[in-house]
Length: 86
Image (cartoon, rainbow, N blue to C red; front, side, top):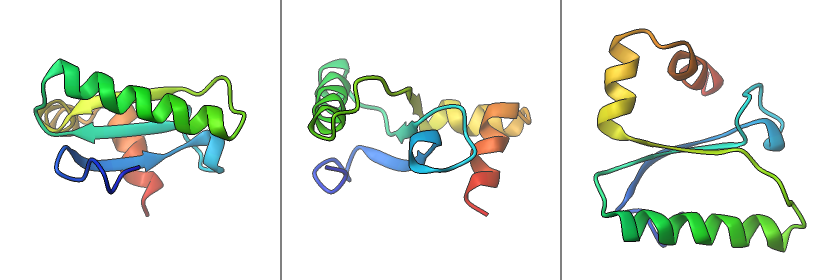
């Protein structure tokens, strides 16, 4: 699924449902995209989770600008995402 949207998705973080120590199950850092395109990505993710019989998943979307701004402010959530990659 991510290959289909590589031009829109800058980075993603797998979370709790994938065995990582994050409160959120999936965090997607996206480039500036139109709302319709973002809704299409959300639909694709919902469908993917449903295919694996996962009814409830916490998915967060954040623009790359917001991610960078929160990183500069030492936001706890963003720092936790960064640490999860180490």
